[in-house]
Length: 331
Image 1: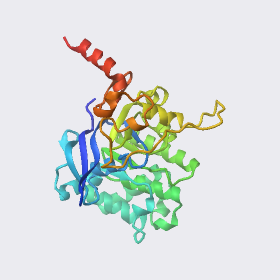
Image 2: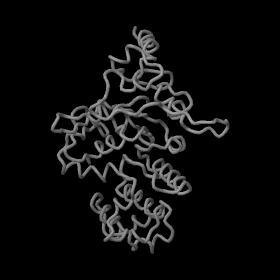
Image 3: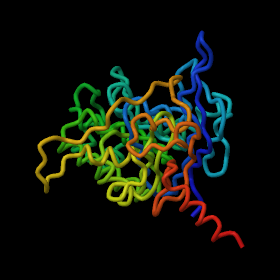
Image 4: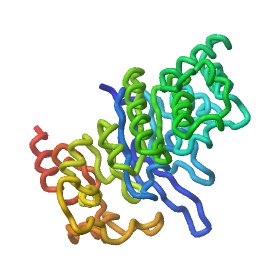
C-alpha cells in the first residue's frame, strides 16, 4: 500500500544570535492509510515539533531547513501559507493536548463545527448542522441535538476532547495529527478516547500520527511506533516488536523503566544522564554518552536507520547484520 504521508530527512531550524539551532536533524518515516503511527520519546526529543512541521504550524522563527513532507505524493512543506491553510483542516486534522486551546470560548460548539464543515466542504448550513450533530454522536456526546448549542465551558474535560476530535474529523481529513490527546484526562477517560480514536479513524480510513510519552497508550493504540531521541528517529517498527524486542539501547532503556506487574523489583530501572539540548548534541550517535554498549565508532560516526530484526534502528550494534543482509539482496 502506498504511504499516505511521507516524511524524508526533515530538518527544522531556529535562527539565533549565536547561529542556527537545529532542533530536528533528518527525521524520516511514513504512514499508510488507516494506520496509526505512535511517536514517543522524552520531552525535547522533537515529537511535537515534527507534528507542527507536518501541519504547517511551526512557531516563528522556526523553519523547515531541509527534507520533504509529502501527502499522497504531493509535496506540502514548501507551499504558501494560504494554500497550506486550505490543506490544514480539509486534508489534515489536528488534535491538541488541551482542548480549551482548540475551542473558541465565545462560540457554541455547533457554530465552530458548522463553520469548519462549510469552510472545507460544499454543503448548506442545514447539512453542515446535520453533519455536526452526527459527528458529536459518533464521538460519544450524549444528547447531541441539544448539546450542539452549548459553549465549551459547559462540557467536562473528557467531553471537550471528544468535541475537539469531532472538530478534527469535521472535513473528513486523510491524516490526523494527535499531539498528546489524552495527557490531561483521567485514566478511564483516556481509555474511552483511545477506543474512540481507533474506531473512527479505522472506519474512515484516515492515517493517524499519535504523539505521546505514554508507552501504555502506544501499546493499546498503535500499529507501529517511532522512538525519537535528540531530534532523530532512534528506532521504528511494529509496536509489538519495539516493546518486547527493542533493538536500540535507548528503546530498551525506556522499556525497562516501565514497572512490570508480574515481577517484584526493589527499584525501577533508569537511564543515567539526560538528553542533550539542541545545539549541544555530541558527535556521532547522540545517545552514546548514556549508552552502556557504546563503542569507539559511536563517538565519531552518526548511524542512520538500518535493519535490526523486525524493526529499524539507528545503532551501530546492528551494522554487521545490516551489511550482510544488503549483500544477500545484491544480485
